[in-house]
Image (cartoon, rainbow, N blue to C red):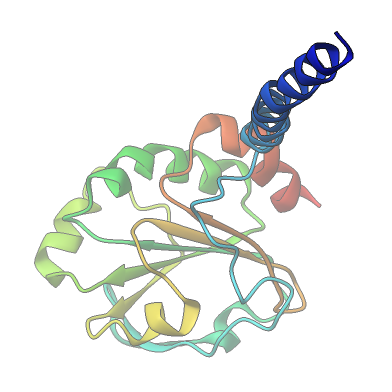
Length: 184
């Protein structure tokens, strides 16, 4: 009788271990899924570091040279975009709104591997940018670690990258994070 009782306890424990493991793993996954951060998007190596050097011509002003001096001691929003990028088109009206609300923020568009005429046509319904750097060879994007369009960075007045977002900016993201960063 004692052996049956021991056997029953052992079988109960052996059956309970996988159930406990599943519960622990489920709790861990639930916790991580409830976080605001998307684990599939790596954090930027640039966060809390100096903004990379930018050297380019301006899309609309041709001979104007764009470099980091044009936004010296200003808060800057840098947005990588292209005319062929559907998510870029989706966020474009919100960028116009941001440029109208935050007049003290310098908006730098970086036109990535795009046909200049197509990029200019893309901006016909509104241009939120103070300047637009041309990145035909992708070097600027590479220096920023861009791997998909659109990507947006916020640079503080000291030239430090304080925010990065991969994908289109949404009203929810603006209300939750970007508005505060641009207003401070």
